[in-house]
Length: 509
Image (cartoon, rainbow, N blue to C red; front, side):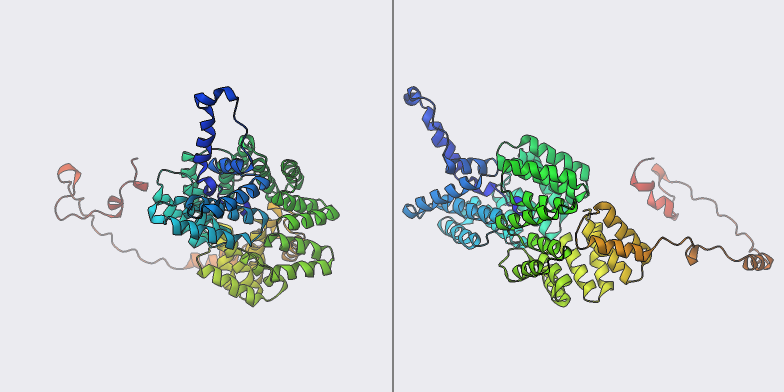
């Protein structure tokens, strides 16, 4: 869930000042005035960001209004410009509203003009990295994240930005290393939720589930608990357990009534359970709350699978004409299956050239090539998508169809069957096609491949009657070289391959 991955840490600039201001209420002269009042919405949002937690959307809106008002009278406050830019980015990502991103960029560039990065404006650097990630510009996100890490080598705030960037670039080992560093420097629900995502991307499903459960237990604020519960729902859905997923998404929505990722997840689970009217209702609610391109495509394909062609066409048109940040994969899959496959290939080749080499991009490029009539090249990318670690039913199905087009029936049968085994409900539009493909491939043949078949009896008999070749006289064996001092070979002697290699594996016996 991309919207859950934008770093909240970048809002933390100035949080210390808020806490310090609160602490002033405890000076001895004021002790007789009673306890301090609870923090207001803007302060709550700032304190949440300082802890790496999510603020509620009303609190986030209050923080934006508060900083906008402050900056009208204090336009040289670089920290407030950075805080405002980070808040715009967070709101835009959580609402799917790209109109907040230009506002964020203007605020952050103003912050850097007032106090350049070279003078220690780490908050603006982190916010620029989060903004680039929200826009799907992973190279730029990585650059800003690495600058912020160098500026604050002992801090933790750069690592969420870097994890998103590495994942977007397909560098999953670097993302895991960043996650491990984050775990050593910070704690809480946010860290456990990110660990769940990392484990899931590596194919470690049990670890991902355990980390998500820990995130639920650690979460204090409703937005964090909803995000962790939605992650648990996603994991259950990807395992092909729609009933379990439905329960988890329902629990997330009990925390945040209109939580976009949970609404989308519940729509998927309801469709898998045959409750299609409810699924359509939830898709419409999800798109009203969080109109992400991948949600528009999924909702359109559900409508198409139900014969609601007019609604499907309207959703596909919305995806094609909308203003999206980071929607290239969804647009390519739409073109590959419902438009111009050649256009999808061009779109994904451009993403690949930009260094965006995640498994999602590899899968989409492979599928686009297959649909454009280039299955041989397509298989290279489909193999990369399925061999990285993530267990995806969609990726396995795509690879199986590509192999079927190449006449590789054994691998095709294996991957299409794997898709249905991973999640038998992975797509309302594609699951029937996968079932048809598997039926067309039939059962594996009982006949051995040609290279493994035994030779016919007459060939073996002819071979046994062939005259044996005379053996060459044995050459005299030279005496072994005498060892020199400290186990070294004598001068002029040459060690053989085994001696040169040393013990197997380079270790001691």
